[in-house]
Image (cartoon, rainbow, N blue to C red):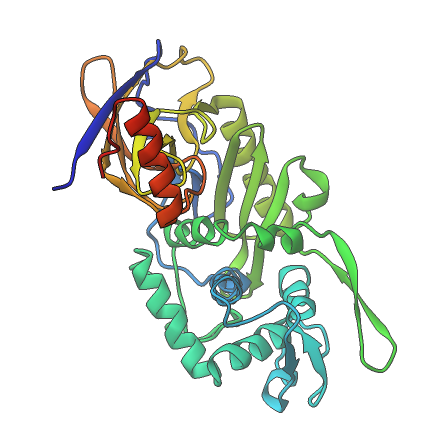
Length: 387
């Protein structure tokens, strides 16, 4: 039978709830819709018409980049893979990096062309690389959006050029951006302000980021601008200061300066008002658990991820306890394997979060000889090692 062990790990801390729906002034007056979200918890810090369906323009590429990064991280695609540019990809209008049919580029080069210069030709080449056809890639985009809860989104292309029935919302864009940020490698590309794409004929194309805040706002390292006559000026941005990373989305501004102003206003509000407090790190032990059949007989239990709580700048230091529930551990066990849970309990005894726990290090299975020696040691000490 499985055994359950409970540890209580207490802190002299109290975690107040952040009231995200309090009345504040219009932080993005120039935009039709906008939202501000804590990237860690998904807490909405500000919203205006966040579910209004609007054309996203090149912010569409947030979803395209998410599918690219997921393919890279699941091993079906490599940053060094070669991509053959098709006639279809090279013929894309709008913003482009001037790819020619028959040229080949590595995934990392095309990803830079998408993230920095918003290349429509580059994103179509990647769509064809991943799914075979643009149509199949778009189907995958819509499926992934639905999985994320972006229920007011529908894509008909991977680049964002105006098309009938191609729309999303500020809220849905924030959901997609939050998921994209789970692949931090993307920030190595979206944070580039200027660079060059080396062409196969020996020439090069100067790439300048369409998101000027990457250069002019401390902490901004992504994600994607957008503009068409229908969409107006749009921007999904992310910035990090100290332990706080936020996502902002503005849609439908009339000028580039207005979208920059509204985004700056949202970011300033977030960093002036909120903070993320690290309550417990993955390096801190919640207790020790016995391991059966392991080279080592016990191991520390730790969180799979740091426990971070969003607070107001003026909020007092938090106070919680952890109720740890772990099933019997049988080697081999890898660090990162979920072995149980941790209930986060506030001062009133309410469970406010449930977190995954793991072991602090890998525990290999003991050989029969190692088990013999351990049993011999325990017998010598007057004990028998119980499996």
